[in-house]
Image 1 (tube, rainbow, N blue to C red):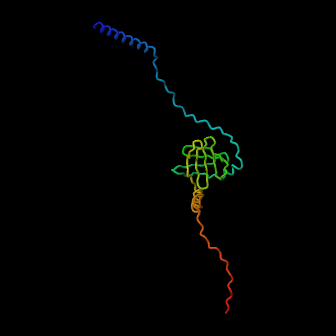
Image 2: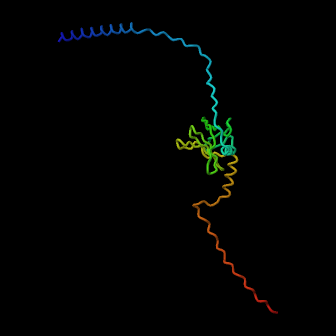
Image 3: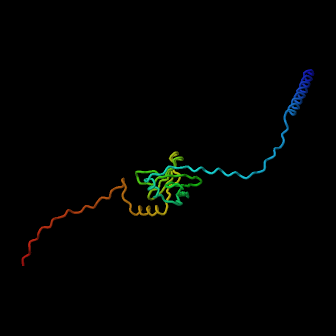
Length: 191
């Protein structure tokens, strides 16, 4: 048994020596890294100026639609707001919602609603008589709803005051009028 213990101790000693020799060889093979000096901070480079894009002219019909767009800040529900500004290109608009900005141009509708669309992002601004809304068609979501400017607020109040019955509302039943009785000539009274 003592023989096995001695052989084990000799094996461990030789293994330790081999590991030490390998680690000494690795140390000599690994180059020493020198600290890299950082270059002095230079002035930030401004982003390149945007190249002006020549957009096609809008048709007279689209320009007439663009004349009806209400500009300015429009408050919406849940504290959101949408800012509609005139773009440098005639008939086009810049629309800002939060940190997002969209370049919108009018499209024709059959309903008479004013519709501005950003073809790149799929965002649509609908301006109705009593409210406006911002939609993202690609994801099927309303970004801002119940956006009302002063002009739309006046129209909404007028609509509330003159409510007409809806299609599914019960029609008021008219009160029957008695049939007209023809008057018969009365005989002249004799005295």
